[in-house]
Length: 511
Ligand SMILES: Cc1cc2nc3c(=O)[nH]c(=O)nc-3n(C[C@H](O)[C@H](O)[C@H](O)COP(=O)(O)OP(=O)(O)OC[C@H]3O[C@@H](n4cnc5c(N)ncnc54)[C@H](O)[C@@H]3O)c2cc1C
Image (tube, rainbow, N blue to C red; front, side, top):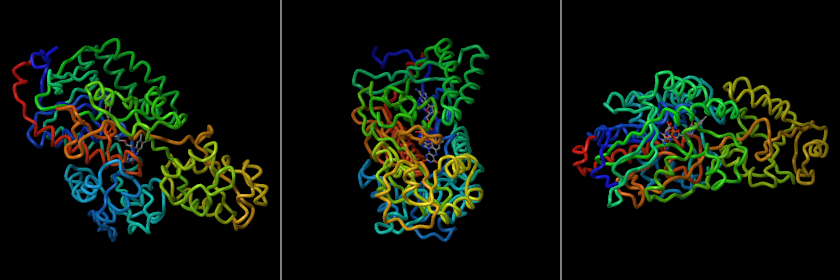
């Protein structure tokens, strides 16, 4: 059908598909630029952002860094990220990301997102409720490249802070008059004869019976956290959610006068895409929500967009907390040291995955083990605590000599000959491939290729992409906070650009 004469059920200047961090930031910027913005979300918004740790990677001298007495510069941040995150984006784009980082945090703070300057004094995967600024990457491991600085800005809230992050962004969008259609799934992009994207075909529960909408909302909400930590339960709860969509969803066509932003998350929940693009990562813990089914990426591809880095998955193996674990040596089954233990959990996870059989053990001597045990209670939040206890008890073998402990772990003792420590020795299983009680969490990094100047999907006029639906700063390699920071960066870029398009005329076709 010719999109220019299509009868729309409703229209907006800008349609944003997905209301996580990227979608919210796009909507806020587009609304600030004067556009009438309509956001569609398959569920109630929030996405993976709302269940995340709420850590935003930022530096170059943010207000929080300065208040904590930390020295940092955009150049140091750039030098480190260039090394750690590689060339997923051009040097110019990464430089812009670093140069604008201080302003990005101020922008978020201006929207009501709370940050705090309390600096965590030890290395951890996620600080406790006493600390909100920390070394969230591998900065100290790259000290020869750039002066290390703590850049993990955890949103100020107890527990996992993503909930507050998403809520504040949602409130800021609401205050700007951004309209929402929740329980509305984008299923197809409408394009005109010239290939320009002019609208979205959806399936909505808007006219569904009240009980169906309620069941859809509640079951989805209940399925999200178990979907990460107890996948079987998450799947069982999500099955009726999909059934309700099939049974009660009704078509809805929405026209977009200026364009469409795809911000629908990644694809870690889509078995087929994972099998096709990232077969090595089977068995990991899927970090996301059922909305991370790759639909945003597929919508873009069907409209003519291309993808990159779909094979890049961030799989995490955190040695810390407790920070005492850094006194150990991470070895493969031949007893060879795998990598620098102070690297971020994603770099360690990748190194373990690539080691023979995906197997790895952390070798500790007696004083180190004792130190770790002492630190557990003080350095962990609930979701880290059970894991640390497990690793230090059930997940550990010990022996009076290196040969004995290696034999128990199934490691070749020859590789450990130069290790000097105090017996008895322990080895903790940090394998990735083997099914362990502590599966490795993972998220997808690749997505639609975009013009880095404006966020437009390459080759598709009227279409923009942001967050984990698009290629971004973290698409080669992730450190804590880099995905959310990229969602803000890319979401704002797409929102500004789409709002500046003005094709006009669409409103005449209101259905
Ligand atoms: C437990 C956990 C902890 C994490 N901690 C951090 C952290 O501290 N720092 C960090 O940087 N990253 C973290 N991450 C990763 C980060 O949360 C995500 O990469 C990021 O939130 C993705 O944001 P997004 O806006 O791209 O997508 P999302 O926040 O997932 O939002 C996408 C939205 O699109 C909707 N949607 C999907 N498909 C459709 C469709 N077809 N039609 C309409 N709507 C659709 C979904 O319902 C969802 O609301 C964490 C992830 C998890 C799961």
